[in-house]
Image (cartoon, rainbow, N blue to C red):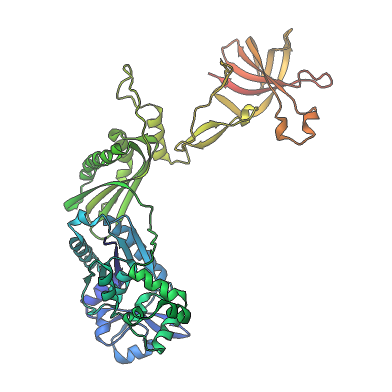
Length: 516
């Protein structure tokens, strides 16, 4: 099956302007204190300039030469942006960077299973080529069964002016396509290339008829390895720029869209198509990304997340609604892609006969808060195996799969805990105690409170296993007796007494929480 498309000889967008003005343009870099040409446009090629030529020789051959310094980091960023744009053709897209040079090379596209979306391989390649030309990139595209063959064909196949080259499927056809190409097309180290040329081995076809054992003994295993990759005898793994998304829906517009309302209306159609894919697998979406491919080659994206898997179009549209305000339309959107980046099993749930179907509940509220303020601003509490109440739970992101409600039950009896705890228990001063040693009047934060009702106590022991081996015998490690108290105005507090049963020490009282 056809697998790989290699896009080679991608030059900077600036060349479009200079091509139109027929001005020779070259990019140079310093090599051993000498300026060397790293890239030339077609006007410079017609003047006899080529990559690797010194700048001084280039000026002799072309007097009206325009020179710019090579910026490989910027070129790579541009190549990455182009690779993101090529995700419209296949999710398996990668940048192809030369390992033996500082320059960028091109792109990989694995179009297995995606060519039919564009009317076949020929239609896909033609569409890709026309877009690259419109963006101002000079390019060459080759398609073959293996990455190595497509890479070699795109860069070394003659004639060089042919933009799209297709190699017939089959091992013999692959060998025939590689045979006339120079050995430099095998992507091996320059030292190996020099040794091959010194022995008169100029073409790949000369290597194909030689015993592999002799090639390995003379030139090392890397030459045979690259040769087998090009022929398909060994698998070559290409790492895509993004994780592969299995579930996505697409919508192509006949004309570029500049109306945001059209994008909003199209979202419902994209969701329905995506839900159909997920329903077959009994899945729900957790993270969704809407990508808009602009006519000028840029890609704009917005993403939303949910606290649980779902297939609810109305809720998802509400989450996208605010972010669509920042959806950059550029000079027009020609393609919309909705991807389910993260999915989880969706377990059917019984709907209530009483609750309104319009009721969205807490999970939907959490989703809206997360997408408005960010996932780091909304938290849930999960239980921790600790006795002390201030350590019995911890905060985690509301989108986490570990979110579970706190369960305060013990042997079938509910333990009433306050909804609000102080970060650190604060001391209170007891002004009067009842006969059972519970507070009657106490002072906290310079205010006095008279107790009307008292409940408790609830004994919470020390966490001896978290301390040193001497800590269980340390009398400073107090148990706590917690009480629910209500004052005459109806305010309800959660207080505790530490050291109540130690005769040599006076018990101390603390405020720890509040009840509604």
